[in-house]
Image 1: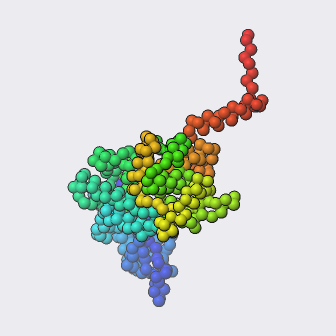
Image 2: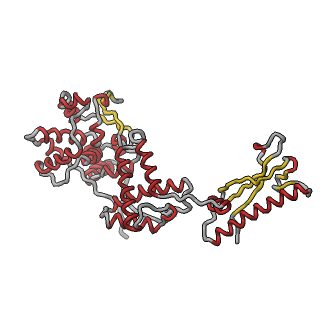
Image 3: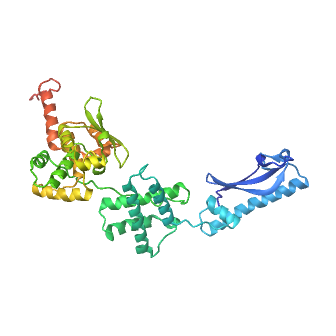
Length: 416
């Protein structure tokens, strides 16, 4: 048997008594992790051999202490053998428990998950958005339901979570919960954070996600075309409620702000930008990332229209926005009236800003990303789509450059 355990004896000079006598300690190391314990023996530092890790000489004191140290080393190695026989992995914690007869504390999944969620709850508004907490609470609820469905238990030891657990959990999400691919992947990703937490604390020896792979599928993002935007602008709504919802939606179409960020806007968020024009300066609630957006003429018209609205004045808000649920319900009415065959939601405005309003009109994707408050371009690419019309326009410019210059000239083929 190839031992993975090393035992080293040393004296702790920091714990020397008034006479300078030092206690002897044993240090047990297993794959770069270790634990220590007292040998319950003491020795004068001058009589200790650091190289031999034992007491110098052959007198009675040296023989007695060194014999005791050999006994302790054998005890450690015997404990290692017992772990092998029990088919228990030899780790620092397991060996220590075997050596001293202590029982390893069972770490259960649900309390760890709950503790994680409670910490997020305390940091909502500081480091996390309320939606983040809700996602993890839902993920915990799903995990509990899965435990009942699969194992008929309310909790499970984390060391029993393996690759099969993960794949069965994903199957349950897709079949029993009827989650779409991307939704199932997101719940598994939330669960993986709890596993990473356990690994970081050395509560797990093996990562159950090591051989697990999942992939988020590309979703076709819905956005409005220029014609659809113009149709909504030109429509004369008979009710004030639909007119208000239309205006707030258009405000988002020309600023790219999400519902919650529009709701949080006040007049203090408007200042002069680097160009001397009015800009919106805000931070996205979801990511706390800064968004700096120049105000377009249509945006300013909407701001001016509701500058003296009672709801805006009373609540110190830039716009008198309704609840997200009501906004989405009324947007469906607007889509019907304007004959738009798309499921209109408030979030579509953000995609419309990224694709139709900015990128299609020549605004570089880096600038679009900055205004949307994204941390990287990959996220922006999910929002902004390069349309065929834009490709055609760009290539026409390139075609004109080639036509008016001698940059590239193909030599005609000479017939033999």
